[in-house]
Structures are given as C-alpha cells and as structure tokens.
Image 1 (cartoon, rainbow, N blue to C red):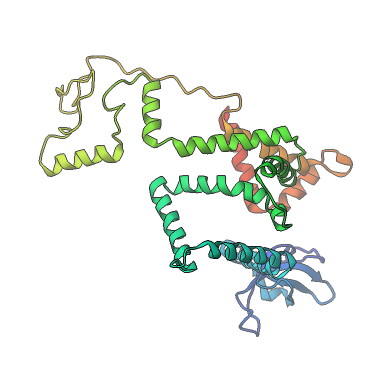
Image 2 (cartoon, one colour; image 1 turned 120 degrees about the vertical axis):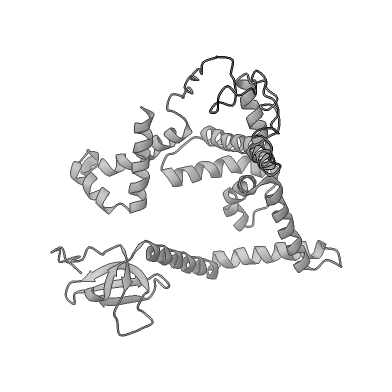
Length: 351
C-alpha cells in the first residue's frame, strides 16, 4: 500500500473502515474494522473490529487495505448490531424488556381461552399483510409512521415508567418534537414551530392516505377542463392496455374497444394519423408555476446546504477560512459529499 509521508498516519487510514488481509490467523482475514490509532514506534495500526469494537488489534500496514463499499456497509451493520446488543444488555435494555414482558402478560391475560399467544401473533401478522394488500405498501409505511411517531417521541417518558394519558400526549409531543429537532439540526425552535411541523407532517400523511391515484387523476382532469368520458372515468393505464390486448387477440382494429373521445373523430386521415382533430393546432400548455423556492425539495436542499456548508467554512474565531473548508471537505464521508452535490444541483436547476 502506498504511503503519503505522514508519520502519524502513513497510509491515510485513521478513522476509516479497513479490511484485514494476509494474516496468519485465518479467522481474521476478511474481517473489517475501524482504524483508531497508529503506533509510530511499532509502525502498526490499532484496529477496532466491527463485530466487537472492544477487541483492538495491532496490525502492520501490509495486513490492511481500504474497505470497499460493501465491506463498509457490512462493518457498520455489525457495529450497529453490537451496539444494539450492548444496549439491550444494559440497564435501559433490561427496563425495556421488563416493560415489554409486562405488556405481553397483560395482553395474554385478556385473550380468550381458545386463543394462544402464537395464534394472536399470527392474526396480527395476517391483519398487517391484509392492510398492505388493501392500501398498498407505500400507504402502509405512511400509516405506520403516523402511528409510531408519537410513540418514538414519548419513548423516554414510557421507559421511565410514567403513566401517559391523552392530555399528557397533547402536552408532551410538541415538547419532545422540539427537543428532537434541536438534537438533529442544532436549531432551537419554539414549540409553535414544532407544532406547525407536526401538523404539516400529518396533513401530508392524511392527504396521501385518503387520495387514490384515480381520484388524483380525475381532480387533475377536472382542473384542466377535461370533461371527456375517459378523463373522468376510472380507466387507468392497465385497463387501457388490457383493452388493446383484447383487440389484438380478437383481431380487431386497433383502438376498437376504447370509448369514443368527445371532440375527436375516429376517421383516419392518413396511414400515419388515425385521428382527425378537426384541423386544430396543438397548443403548448403553459409551464407549471413554481413557488418562491421551487417546491419542498429545493427548500430541503437549501436547508442542507446552510446546515452543512456554514460550519465547514468557519475557522478559528468564527471567521470564514478556505483552508478549513478544504480540510473539512476532505474529511467528509462520501455519502455527505453526494448529498451536498445533489442539493447544489437541485438549487442550480431551479434557475
């Protein structure tokens, strides 16, 4: 592996995921870990294994190589599983298990005598699968998000064993949402802003849940002034494709099964133009008007840029520094660089 001349990190591996290779211990070869230190006296890197970060290995440079994308993903997944196991083995994990056991005991006690816990779980799984089949997987995820968001926000209070009623939910959810926004973004928003974000999220969620694709298509057709039978019917692309397929099977003229369109005559005017539109010229519809920032996606891109670029540019004393920006950019993970590039592209495309 090539070196960069830096005695403190000759291979530029510190704080990066590396793959262990060519060691005398076959069980270590192929494993990944995080390079946490470099011993200049022994010329060895200290590697914290992804499967067990408490186990630190001291390895030579020739026994390491930068991990690829898949190896990094496996290492991070192993690290998350290890941390989850440590959390569940700790006092908080034991508290969660105890509360889950208490809830399960109460549910089991209320079940009829002929219903076993296993039957109950199977029934819940069947209900969830039926819900996915009826509303679709996307709407199912939205519904689960709506239900789980208050639970996630109130989880610290639940873990403390607090008795939470409806009034407590109304009082605590905005407060916990405000704390979550502050921890995630660093911005200290007011409770009114947190409530507004909460209401906006549920408004979009309800809109997604209650509007079907056919309803949206009919609403768009009505708004555009399309009063034709097809535009206001429940025909979708799949149904129209089925009509064309049936025409081909029955050796009928193409489009025979399609309903007649208002204002369109089905008399072919040439071999290449099946429909006669009465000599009317096609009018290019006006472009869709965009908001001040071009929509919610551009607003999010602007927020990401402001949140990421401003701290990257500030050097000692809070003054902008190009060298600090370059250093922070080199140390930034690839996924964050990609997110920044995509945000810049979205904002540039707006103009």
